[in-house]
Image (cartoon, rainbow, N blue to C red):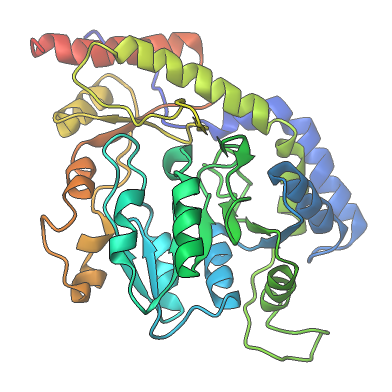
Length: 376
């Protein structure tokens, strides 16, 4: 193709900021004028707003999404000798936190249509050491929570929803994060609800768990300088909370725009030999954190997109069970075939609420040209 189109980024955070910059500046100024720069009313207000949004009783802000998972595991007493079942096809943090508390991640392969954990394989992975399940709502697509919750009830297991990529997504009308023992969210800048730095939050209906999390995030102290447990320094910054409070009022609008763009991609690519993880089939309503294509020509398409001024990304090139750090778990190539296959085939196309019609048409044209030039 003749590449005369301006560079299309995978994500344009500046474009989003430009639309709300005056509100963001006012929020920052309000915090600075308050003189309360650690915890305080802005964090409290945001926690209440997130709890209400997710339909739960409690929300506890922490420093990042990884800490949200870590502190939840710790607060639930998951530790040395325990096992936690999760997916190998996700960001490393999901398994990392299991290892950090001294437990062992147990990986279960993924579904072919959604790339989420295959709930039909969970029960076979349960042992006497299993303490919890961490289902990941990958790319913003909810997991089949009915089956996860049934299993957890039958085997008396905790369910920690890794909803870091999925704020606003619903399963049977319920917000992700609200259905398990606890739900964990990340406000990393690239997320659908992204901050201007790191941030995270835990939501739950368990009053005792919320109380323990609030203690753990401030060095395990309650009251200050009195320590009943070993904790963390993991607090949501009030400036981040205030800015996220502004963004929260737009999240449903932004998620709807993501869905609109994604469905346009789906229609444009329906006759091509690609697979897109299903996100809009009842009872699931995803939020398209990423728009993922799976193709056997992944690396060639990646290069072709770059040649034509379109940024794309690979999420995730090596499944967790094959990472060097988990070699001791004994997994070999072929152990979890679907995860391994998908990791070699997937790439993400640009998708964000500010993506213009012209830019999306260019992306579609380039993808279609790629296949046409190969006679596919």
